[in-house]
Image 1: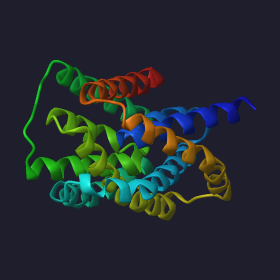
Image 2 (image 1 turned 60 degrees about the vertical axis):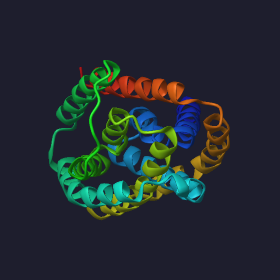
Image 3 (image 1 turned 135 degrees about the vertical axis):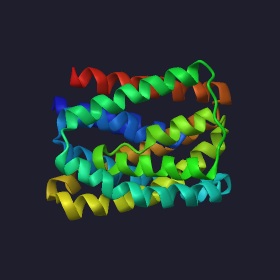
Length: 238
């Protein structure tokens, strides 16, 4: 019963964040789902739920999508996806998560100290590759794109629209790669189906929240989620 309650809270909060910000689901859900499920189950449930959210919202955010950046993200991710699944299959997850947590915390600190970078085509491609690798390895494509857009001072509309469009592609491909190389189970799909009513509730709540948050609050939420993710992954491995 405790696991069911925890699972319900995780999915509802993460779906609300994903809808209102465009990036919250994997960052919030994956660390906590790993408390309940094995890595394969947690990652695939995350991918399925995130894919549903992206499909539900894509028509609404289509005018906010930066098509050029999106294409380069996708091209880069195709290079990163096989790297990620290789890491998932052969690398020690503790070492991987520890390295990622330290990197996220260091980069977030730079952003808080007002470090900014210019958006370029090569950086778009590199961020897409990094995101693709993280998706198939730990189910979290969000941190690289979130850090990148925050560093370039992207508007909340551009960030949400472009990331949701990218996730629609990356989650689908990553789920297929996970199933092909790591396998899947009936329980994973049954659990994902149980989460759908909570995902729908999160979609409704997230849309309401998005209308009432300004750019400053949006950036604060961004930094908060990044710091949370970095510290959580770090403490989990120590």
